[in-house]
Image 1: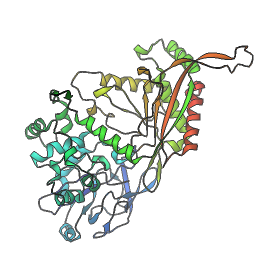
Image 2: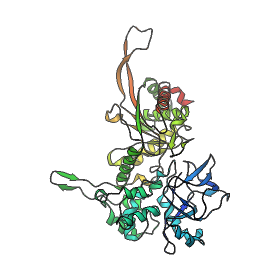
Image 3: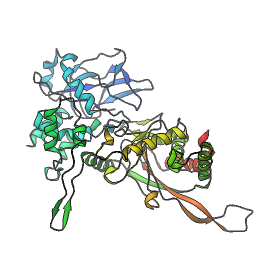
Image 4: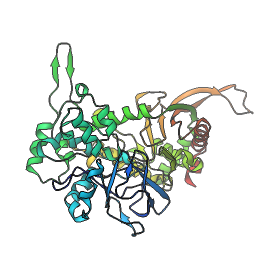
Length: 471
Protein backbone atom coordinates (compact mmCIF):
# COMPACT_ATOMS: atom_id res chain seq x y z
CA UNK A 1 0.00 0.00 0.00
CA UNK A 2 0.98 3.63 -0.11
CA UNK A 3 -0.52 7.01 0.70
CA UNK A 4 -3.60 6.99 -1.53
CA UNK A 5 -5.43 9.85 0.01
CA UNK A 6 -5.80 13.53 0.13
CA UNK A 7 -3.70 16.58 0.79
CA UNK A 8 -5.40 19.65 2.22
CA UNK A 9 -3.77 22.56 3.97
CA UNK A 10 -5.78 24.73 6.35
CA UNK A 11 -4.80 28.31 7.07
CA UNK A 12 -4.64 27.73 10.84
CA UNK A 13 -2.09 24.92 10.51
CA UNK A 14 1.39 24.58 8.98
CA UNK A 15 1.68 22.69 5.65
CA UNK A 16 0.43 19.16 6.23
CA UNK A 17 -1.39 16.20 4.74
CA UNK A 18 -4.51 14.50 6.06
CA UNK A 19 -4.18 10.81 5.21
CA UNK A 20 -7.25 8.59 4.93
CA UNK A 21 -7.76 4.86 5.30
CA UNK A 22 -6.31 3.36 2.09
CA UNK A 23 -8.12 1.00 -0.26
CA UNK A 24 -5.75 -1.97 -0.41
CA UNK A 25 -7.71 -4.27 -2.71
CA UNK A 26 -10.27 -3.95 -5.50
CA UNK A 27 -13.10 -4.93 -3.16
CA UNK A 28 -11.98 -3.29 0.08
CA UNK A 29 -14.51 -0.88 1.55
CA UNK A 30 -13.42 -0.83 5.20
CA UNK A 31 -10.34 -1.73 7.21
CA UNK A 32 -9.15 -1.98 10.80
CA UNK A 33 -5.87 -0.56 12.10
CA UNK A 34 -4.23 -3.51 13.85
CA UNK A 35 -1.16 -1.58 15.01
CA UNK A 36 0.63 1.71 14.49
CA UNK A 37 4.27 1.06 13.57
CA UNK A 38 5.18 4.72 14.11
CA UNK A 39 4.15 7.19 16.78
CA UNK A 40 3.48 10.91 16.75
CA UNK A 41 6.71 12.79 16.09
CA UNK A 42 8.38 9.82 14.36
CA UNK A 43 10.01 10.42 10.98
CA UNK A 44 9.61 8.07 8.02
CA UNK A 45 10.99 7.55 4.54
CA UNK A 46 9.41 6.22 1.34
CA UNK A 47 8.63 2.53 1.80
CA UNK A 48 8.44 2.64 5.60
CA UNK A 49 5.43 0.93 7.19
CA UNK A 50 3.20 3.48 8.89
CA UNK A 51 0.66 1.03 10.26
CA UNK A 52 -0.71 -2.47 9.83
CA UNK A 53 -4.22 -2.71 8.36
CA UNK A 54 -6.56 -5.68 8.61
CA UNK A 55 -9.00 -6.22 5.73
CA UNK A 56 -11.58 -8.91 5.22
CA UNK A 57 -9.01 -10.95 3.28
CA UNK A 58 -5.54 -10.19 4.67
CA UNK A 59 -3.35 -8.15 6.99
CA UNK A 60 -1.04 -5.77 5.12
CA UNK A 61 1.27 -2.84 5.80
CA UNK A 62 0.33 0.70 4.83
CA UNK A 63 3.54 2.18 3.38
CA UNK A 64 4.70 5.76 2.91
CA UNK A 65 5.24 7.09 -0.58
CA UNK A 66 7.38 10.08 0.48
CA UNK A 67 9.42 11.08 3.52
CA UNK A 68 7.77 13.00 6.33
CA UNK A 69 6.84 13.09 10.00
CA UNK A 70 3.76 11.72 11.78
CA UNK A 71 2.13 14.80 13.32
CA UNK A 72 -1.14 13.37 14.64
CA UNK A 73 -2.70 9.90 14.87
CA UNK A 74 -6.45 10.45 14.50
CA UNK A 75 -7.68 6.86 14.85
CA UNK A 76 -6.14 4.56 17.46
CA UNK A 77 -5.31 0.92 16.79
CA UNK A 78 -8.11 -1.57 17.38
CA UNK A 79 -10.79 1.07 16.96
CA UNK A 80 -13.02 -1.05 14.75
CA UNK A 81 -13.75 -0.92 11.03
CA UNK A 82 -13.00 2.35 9.24
CA UNK A 83 -14.46 3.22 5.80
CA UNK A 84 -11.84 3.81 3.10
CA UNK A 85 -10.98 7.50 2.80
CA UNK A 86 -11.77 8.32 6.44
CA UNK A 87 -8.89 10.41 7.95
CA UNK A 88 -6.58 8.32 10.14
CA UNK A 89 -3.47 10.48 10.55
CA UNK A 90 -1.79 13.79 9.71
CA UNK A 91 1.74 14.08 8.34
CA UNK A 92 4.07 17.07 8.00
CA UNK A 93 7.48 17.61 6.48
CA UNK A 94 9.09 19.55 9.34
CA UNK A 95 9.32 17.91 12.77
CA UNK A 96 9.07 21.36 14.35
CA UNK A 97 5.46 21.59 13.12
CA UNK A 98 4.30 18.53 15.08
CA UNK A 99 3.27 20.42 18.28
CA UNK A 100 0.85 22.55 16.23
CA UNK A 101 -1.31 19.46 15.68
CA UNK A 102 -1.64 18.43 19.31
CA UNK A 103 -5.32 19.45 19.38
CA UNK A 104 -6.07 18.62 15.73
CA UNK A 105 -9.41 16.81 15.42
CA UNK A 106 -11.27 15.23 12.52
CA UNK A 107 -13.80 18.05 12.46
CA UNK A 108 -11.02 20.44 11.50
CA UNK A 109 -10.42 18.39 8.40
CA UNK A 110 -14.11 18.25 7.48
CA UNK A 111 -13.89 20.86 4.70
CA UNK A 112 -11.49 18.54 2.85
CA UNK A 113 -13.81 15.56 2.95
CA UNK A 114 -16.01 16.35 -0.07
CA UNK A 115 -13.17 17.31 -2.45
CA UNK A 116 -11.28 14.24 -1.27
CA UNK A 117 -14.00 11.93 -2.50
CA UNK A 118 -14.13 13.79 -5.80
CA UNK A 119 -10.43 13.38 -6.59
CA UNK A 120 -9.89 9.73 -5.78
CA UNK A 121 -12.93 7.66 -6.69
CA UNK A 122 -11.09 4.63 -8.05
CA UNK A 123 -10.48 1.48 -5.98
CA UNK A 124 -7.06 -0.17 -5.77
CA UNK A 125 -5.29 -2.75 -6.98
CA UNK A 126 -3.01 0.08 -6.40
CA UNK A 127 -3.34 3.66 -5.70
CA UNK A 128 -2.67 4.53 -9.34
CA UNK A 129 -6.15 3.53 -10.18
CA UNK A 130 -7.57 7.02 -9.98
CA UNK A 131 -9.84 8.37 -12.69
CA UNK A 132 -8.49 11.15 -14.89
CA UNK A 133 -9.82 13.83 -12.52
CA UNK A 134 -6.50 14.40 -10.69
CA UNK A 135 -4.82 15.34 -13.96
CA UNK A 136 -7.37 18.08 -14.54
CA UNK A 137 -6.89 19.52 -11.06
CA UNK A 138 -3.61 21.40 -11.65
CA UNK A 139 -5.13 23.51 -14.44
CA UNK A 140 -8.05 24.59 -12.28
CA UNK A 141 -6.27 24.89 -8.95
CA UNK A 142 -4.05 27.92 -9.40
CA UNK A 143 -6.69 30.56 -10.20
CA UNK A 144 -9.10 29.45 -7.48
CA UNK A 145 -6.59 28.83 -4.71
CA UNK A 146 -7.52 25.16 -4.51
CA UNK A 147 -4.72 22.78 -3.53
CA UNK A 148 -3.73 19.87 -5.71
CA UNK A 149 -3.18 16.28 -4.63
CA UNK A 150 0.51 16.40 -3.62
CA UNK A 151 2.80 15.52 -0.74
CA UNK A 152 4.24 18.21 1.57
CA UNK A 153 7.72 17.33 0.32
CA UNK A 154 6.59 17.92 -3.29
CA UNK A 155 5.22 21.37 -2.36
CA UNK A 156 8.50 22.31 -0.68
CA UNK A 157 10.66 21.05 -3.54
CA UNK A 158 8.63 23.05 -6.05
CA UNK A 159 9.33 26.24 -4.11
CA UNK A 160 13.01 25.37 -3.56
CA UNK A 161 13.47 24.92 -7.31
CA UNK A 162 11.84 28.27 -8.03
CA UNK A 163 8.68 26.84 -9.61
CA UNK A 164 6.39 28.57 -7.11
CA UNK A 165 3.09 27.03 -6.07
CA UNK A 166 2.76 23.45 -7.28
CA UNK A 167 -0.88 24.14 -8.18
CA UNK A 168 0.34 26.40 -11.01
CA UNK A 169 2.40 23.59 -12.59
CA UNK A 170 1.06 20.98 -14.99
CA UNK A 171 2.60 17.93 -13.39
CA UNK A 172 0.83 14.60 -13.82
CA UNK A 173 1.42 12.77 -10.54
CA UNK A 174 2.74 9.21 -10.60
CA UNK A 175 1.97 8.54 -6.95
CA UNK A 176 -1.14 6.86 -5.55
CA UNK A 177 -4.39 8.26 -6.92
CA UNK A 178 -2.48 10.55 -9.31
CA UNK A 179 -0.82 12.23 -6.32
CA UNK A 180 2.25 14.38 -7.07
CA UNK A 181 5.25 13.10 -5.14
CA UNK A 182 8.75 14.48 -4.65
CA UNK A 183 10.17 12.45 -7.54
CA UNK A 184 7.65 14.01 -9.93
CA UNK A 185 8.92 17.49 -9.02
CA UNK A 186 12.57 16.40 -9.37
CA UNK A 187 11.85 15.06 -12.86
CA UNK A 188 9.70 18.04 -13.90
CA UNK A 189 10.96 19.92 -16.96
CA UNK A 190 9.13 23.25 -17.46
CA UNK A 191 10.18 23.37 -21.11
CA UNK A 192 8.39 20.09 -21.88
CA UNK A 193 5.31 20.67 -19.73
CA UNK A 194 1.99 20.25 -21.60
CA UNK A 195 0.28 23.41 -22.76
CA UNK A 196 -2.75 24.64 -20.81
CA UNK A 197 -5.40 23.12 -23.06
CA UNK A 198 -8.48 24.12 -21.12
CA UNK A 199 -7.07 26.47 -18.50
CA UNK A 200 -9.31 29.46 -19.16
CA UNK A 201 -12.54 27.56 -19.48
CA UNK A 202 -11.74 25.45 -16.42
CA UNK A 203 -11.10 28.63 -14.44
CA UNK A 204 -14.47 30.03 -15.46
CA UNK A 205 -16.19 26.77 -14.53
CA UNK A 206 -14.45 26.70 -11.17
CA UNK A 207 -15.60 30.25 -10.42
CA UNK A 208 -19.18 29.54 -11.41
CA UNK A 209 -19.64 26.23 -9.59
CA UNK A 210 -19.18 25.01 -6.02
CA UNK A 211 -15.79 23.66 -4.99
CA UNK A 212 -17.18 20.16 -4.90
CA UNK A 213 -17.98 20.15 -8.64
CA UNK A 214 -15.88 17.61 -10.53
CA UNK A 215 -13.15 19.24 -12.67
CA UNK A 216 -13.47 16.41 -15.17
CA UNK A 217 -17.07 17.31 -15.93
CA UNK A 218 -16.10 20.91 -16.74
CA UNK A 219 -13.24 19.77 -18.95
CA UNK A 220 -15.43 17.22 -20.71
CA UNK A 221 -17.99 19.84 -21.72
CA UNK A 222 -15.31 22.17 -23.12
CA UNK A 223 -14.33 21.61 -26.76
CA UNK A 224 -10.65 21.46 -27.61
CA UNK A 225 -9.04 24.44 -29.34
CA UNK A 226 -8.91 24.37 -33.12
CA UNK A 227 -5.76 22.85 -34.71
CA UNK A 228 -2.93 25.35 -35.16
CA UNK A 229 -1.35 25.51 -38.62
CA UNK A 230 2.39 26.06 -38.88
CA UNK A 231 4.97 26.08 -41.71
CA UNK A 232 4.76 22.45 -42.82
CA UNK A 233 2.96 21.07 -39.76
CA UNK A 234 -0.27 21.15 -37.76
CA UNK A 235 -0.54 21.09 -33.94
CA UNK A 236 -3.51 19.27 -32.42
CA UNK A 237 -4.50 19.83 -28.80
CA UNK A 238 -5.00 16.80 -26.59
CA UNK A 239 -7.74 16.22 -24.02
CA UNK A 240 -6.63 15.87 -20.41
CA UNK A 241 -7.49 12.17 -20.38
CA UNK A 242 -5.17 11.52 -23.33
CA UNK A 243 -2.29 13.35 -21.64
CA UNK A 244 -2.92 11.39 -18.44
CA UNK A 245 -2.90 8.08 -20.32
CA UNK A 246 0.30 9.00 -22.15
CA UNK A 247 1.99 9.90 -18.87
CA UNK A 248 0.96 6.66 -17.20
CA UNK A 249 2.06 4.49 -20.12
CA UNK A 250 5.38 6.35 -20.26
CA UNK A 251 5.91 5.73 -16.55
CA UNK A 252 4.92 2.06 -16.86
CA UNK A 253 7.32 1.46 -19.74
CA UNK A 254 10.13 3.02 -17.71
CA UNK A 255 9.38 1.22 -14.43
CA UNK A 256 8.24 -2.24 -15.51
CA UNK A 257 10.75 -4.80 -16.86
CA UNK A 258 8.65 -6.06 -19.79
CA UNK A 259 9.14 -9.30 -21.63
CA UNK A 260 6.87 -10.92 -24.21
CA UNK A 261 5.56 -14.40 -25.01
CA UNK A 262 3.53 -15.33 -28.11
CA UNK A 263 1.46 -18.38 -28.98
CA UNK A 264 -0.70 -19.48 -31.91
CA UNK A 265 -4.27 -20.52 -31.20
CA UNK A 266 -6.70 -22.65 -33.19
CA UNK A 267 -10.14 -21.07 -33.01
CA UNK A 268 -12.23 -23.65 -34.83
CA UNK A 269 -13.75 -25.22 -31.69
CA UNK A 270 -14.32 -21.82 -30.15
CA UNK A 271 -16.10 -20.55 -33.28
CA UNK A 272 -18.33 -23.63 -33.28
CA UNK A 273 -19.25 -23.09 -29.62
CA UNK A 274 -20.04 -19.43 -30.27
CA UNK A 275 -22.29 -20.34 -33.19
CA UNK A 276 -24.05 -22.98 -31.10
CA UNK A 277 -24.63 -20.63 -28.14
CA UNK A 278 -25.97 -17.80 -30.28
CA UNK A 279 -28.16 -20.20 -32.23
CA UNK A 280 -29.60 -21.60 -28.99
CA UNK A 281 -30.34 -18.07 -27.73
CA UNK A 282 -31.55 -17.05 -31.20
CA UNK A 283 -29.19 -14.10 -31.22
CA UNK A 284 -26.47 -12.78 -33.47
CA UNK A 285 -23.57 -10.54 -32.51
CA UNK A 286 -25.51 -7.39 -33.43
CA UNK A 287 -28.44 -8.44 -31.23
CA UNK A 288 -26.47 -9.00 -28.04
CA UNK A 289 -25.03 -12.39 -28.97
CA UNK A 290 -21.74 -13.80 -27.72
CA UNK A 291 -18.70 -12.52 -29.66
CA UNK A 292 -15.34 -14.18 -30.19
CA UNK A 293 -13.81 -11.48 -28.01
CA UNK A 294 -16.20 -12.36 -25.16
CA UNK A 295 -15.10 -15.99 -25.31
CA UNK A 296 -11.42 -15.02 -25.38
CA UNK A 297 -11.93 -12.74 -22.37
CA UNK A 298 -13.57 -15.60 -20.49
CA UNK A 299 -10.66 -17.88 -21.49
CA UNK A 300 -8.21 -15.33 -20.08
CA UNK A 301 -10.13 -15.22 -16.79
CA UNK A 302 -10.19 -19.04 -16.67
CA UNK A 303 -6.42 -19.12 -17.24
CA UNK A 304 -6.02 -16.83 -14.22
CA UNK A 305 -7.79 -19.46 -12.14
CA UNK A 306 -5.31 -22.08 -13.37
CA UNK A 307 -2.28 -19.79 -12.88
CA UNK A 308 -3.31 -17.26 -10.19
CA UNK A 309 0.26 -15.93 -9.87
CA UNK A 310 -0.34 -13.90 -13.04
CA UNK A 311 -3.31 -12.06 -11.49
CA UNK A 312 -1.03 -10.02 -9.26
CA UNK A 313 0.77 -6.73 -8.63
CA UNK A 314 4.30 -5.71 -7.67
CA UNK A 315 4.14 -3.89 -4.31
CA UNK A 316 7.87 -3.10 -3.88
CA UNK A 317 8.57 -5.48 -0.99
CA UNK A 318 5.85 -8.08 -1.61
CA UNK A 319 3.59 -9.38 -4.38
CA UNK A 320 -0.18 -9.04 -4.05
CA UNK A 321 -2.30 -11.78 -5.68
CA UNK A 322 -5.94 -10.89 -6.29
CA UNK A 323 -8.96 -13.13 -5.75
CA UNK A 324 -11.10 -11.46 -8.41
CA UNK A 325 -10.14 -11.24 -12.09
CA UNK A 326 -11.04 -7.69 -13.15
CA UNK A 327 -10.22 -7.19 -16.84
CA UNK A 328 -9.69 -3.83 -18.53
CA UNK A 329 -10.97 -4.35 -22.08
CA UNK A 330 -9.72 -1.77 -24.58
CA UNK A 331 -12.56 -0.39 -26.71
CA UNK A 332 -12.77 2.45 -29.20
CA UNK A 333 -9.86 3.99 -31.09
CA UNK A 334 -7.96 7.23 -31.53
CA UNK A 335 -9.04 9.96 -29.12
CA UNK A 336 -11.98 7.76 -28.09
CA UNK A 337 -9.82 4.94 -26.75
CA UNK A 338 -10.86 3.68 -23.32
CA UNK A 339 -10.31 0.58 -21.20
CA UNK A 340 -13.35 0.08 -18.94
CA UNK A 341 -13.02 -2.64 -16.34
CA UNK A 342 -15.16 -5.81 -16.52
CA UNK A 343 -15.46 -6.99 -12.93
CA UNK A 344 -15.10 -10.55 -11.65
CA UNK A 345 -14.79 -12.11 -15.11
CA UNK A 346 -13.75 -15.47 -13.66
CA UNK A 347 -16.95 -16.12 -11.72
CA UNK A 348 -19.55 -14.65 -14.06
CA UNK A 349 -21.28 -16.18 -17.05
CA UNK A 350 -20.50 -15.48 -20.70
CA UNK A 351 -23.74 -13.61 -21.36
CA UNK A 352 -23.21 -11.29 -18.38
CA UNK A 353 -19.67 -10.47 -19.55
CA UNK A 354 -20.88 -9.96 -23.10
CA UNK A 355 -23.57 -7.53 -21.91
CA UNK A 356 -21.00 -5.54 -19.90
CA UNK A 357 -18.67 -5.21 -22.90
CA UNK A 358 -21.57 -4.21 -25.15
CA UNK A 359 -22.66 -1.56 -22.64
CA UNK A 360 -19.11 -0.17 -22.47
CA UNK A 361 -18.85 -0.04 -26.26
CA UNK A 362 -22.21 1.73 -26.45
CA UNK A 363 -20.93 4.41 -24.07
CA UNK A 364 -17.83 5.02 -26.21
CA UNK A 365 -19.92 5.19 -29.39
CA UNK A 366 -22.57 7.31 -27.69
CA UNK A 367 -23.54 10.94 -28.01
CA UNK A 368 -20.84 13.19 -29.41
CA UNK A 369 -19.25 15.36 -26.73
CA UNK A 370 -20.13 12.98 -23.89
CA UNK A 371 -17.31 11.93 -21.57
CA UNK A 372 -17.10 8.17 -20.90
CA UNK A 373 -14.69 8.83 -18.01
CA UNK A 374 -17.67 10.05 -15.99
CA UNK A 375 -19.25 6.58 -16.30
CA UNK A 376 -18.50 4.15 -13.41
CA UNK A 377 -15.77 1.70 -14.38
CA UNK A 378 -14.15 3.77 -17.13
CA UNK A 379 -11.52 5.27 -14.85
CA UNK A 380 -10.78 2.13 -12.83
CA UNK A 381 -7.76 -0.13 -13.13
CA UNK A 382 -8.43 -3.85 -12.94
CA UNK A 383 -5.96 -6.70 -12.47
CA UNK A 384 -5.36 -7.52 -16.17
CA UNK A 385 -5.71 -5.81 -19.56
CA UNK A 386 -6.79 -7.27 -22.89
CA UNK A 387 -6.66 -5.55 -26.29
CA UNK A 388 -7.83 -7.00 -29.61
CA UNK A 389 -6.17 -5.50 -32.69
CA UNK A 390 -7.51 -8.08 -35.12
CA UNK A 391 -10.00 -5.64 -36.66
CA UNK A 392 -7.03 -3.67 -38.01
CA UNK A 393 -5.43 -6.72 -39.60
CA UNK A 394 -2.58 -6.75 -37.06
CA UNK A 395 -1.13 -10.23 -36.63
CA UNK A 396 0.56 -9.63 -33.25
CA UNK A 397 1.48 -6.80 -30.88
CA UNK A 398 3.43 -6.29 -27.65
CA UNK A 399 1.23 -4.14 -25.36
CA UNK A 400 2.55 -1.88 -22.61
CA UNK A 401 1.59 -3.17 -19.17
CA UNK A 402 -0.66 -0.80 -17.25
CA UNK A 403 0.70 -0.42 -13.72
CA UNK A 404 0.06 -1.90 -11.20
CA UNK A 405 -0.99 -4.89 -13.31
CA UNK A 406 1.54 -7.63 -14.05
CA UNK A 407 0.26 -8.75 -17.46
CA UNK A 408 -1.42 -7.48 -20.63
CA UNK A 409 -2.68 -9.61 -23.51
CA UNK A 410 -2.82 -8.55 -27.17
CA UNK A 411 -4.87 -10.54 -29.70
CA UNK A 412 -4.21 -10.51 -33.43
CA UNK A 413 -6.26 -11.02 -36.55
CA UNK A 414 -8.31 -14.19 -37.09
CA UNK A 415 -7.14 -15.78 -40.34
CA UNK A 416 -7.00 -19.04 -42.23
CA UNK A 417 -3.55 -20.59 -42.16
CA UNK A 418 -2.00 -23.74 -43.58
CA UNK A 419 -0.76 -25.79 -40.63
CA UNK A 420 0.53 -29.37 -40.13
CA UNK A 421 -2.30 -31.89 -40.11
CA UNK A 422 -2.62 -33.55 -36.69
CA UNK A 423 -5.15 -36.11 -37.94
CA UNK A 424 -3.26 -39.42 -37.97
CA UNK A 425 -5.85 -41.06 -40.25
CA UNK A 426 -5.67 -38.35 -42.93
CA UNK A 427 -3.45 -38.69 -45.97
CA UNK A 428 -3.00 -34.92 -46.17
CA UNK A 429 0.19 -33.55 -44.61
CA UNK A 430 -1.22 -30.05 -44.13
CA UNK A 431 -4.65 -28.62 -43.48
CA UNK A 432 -6.35 -25.22 -43.39
CA UNK A 433 -7.22 -23.95 -39.92
CA UNK A 434 -8.70 -20.77 -38.37
CA UNK A 435 -5.86 -19.33 -36.30
CA UNK A 436 -4.93 -16.32 -34.14
CA UNK A 437 -1.68 -15.16 -32.50
CA UNK A 438 -1.82 -14.00 -28.87
CA UNK A 439 1.02 -12.10 -27.19
CA UNK A 440 1.35 -11.77 -23.42
CA UNK A 441 3.37 -8.90 -21.93
CA UNK A 442 4.66 -9.73 -18.44
CA UNK A 443 6.26 -7.85 -15.57
CA UNK A 444 9.32 -9.99 -14.85
CA UNK A 445 9.33 -8.92 -11.19
CA UNK A 446 5.98 -10.70 -10.72
CA UNK A 447 5.63 -13.22 -13.54
CA UNK A 448 8.82 -14.97 -14.64
CA UNK A 449 9.18 -16.83 -17.94
CA UNK A 450 7.99 -20.17 -16.58
CA UNK A 451 4.84 -18.70 -15.03
CA UNK A 452 4.11 -16.67 -18.17
CA UNK A 453 4.46 -19.81 -20.29
CA UNK A 454 2.15 -21.73 -17.95
CA UNK A 455 -0.47 -18.99 -18.24
CA UNK A 456 -0.32 -18.98 -22.05
CA UNK A 457 -0.54 -22.78 -22.08
CA UNK A 458 -3.65 -22.62 -19.87
CA UNK A 459 -5.13 -19.89 -22.07
CA UNK A 460 -4.51 -21.98 -25.21
CA UNK A 461 -6.12 -25.03 -23.58
CA UNK A 462 -9.29 -23.08 -22.73
CA UNK A 463 -9.47 -21.51 -26.20
CA UNK A 464 -9.00 -24.79 -28.03
CA UNK A 465 -11.26 -26.70 -25.62
CA UNK A 466 -13.88 -24.01 -25.04
CA UNK A 467 -16.39 -26.31 -23.36
CA UNK A 468 -14.26 -25.71 -20.23
CA UNK A 469 -15.50 -22.11 -20.24
CA UNK A 470 -19.01 -23.34 -19.46
CA UNK A 471 -17.99 -25.25 -16.33
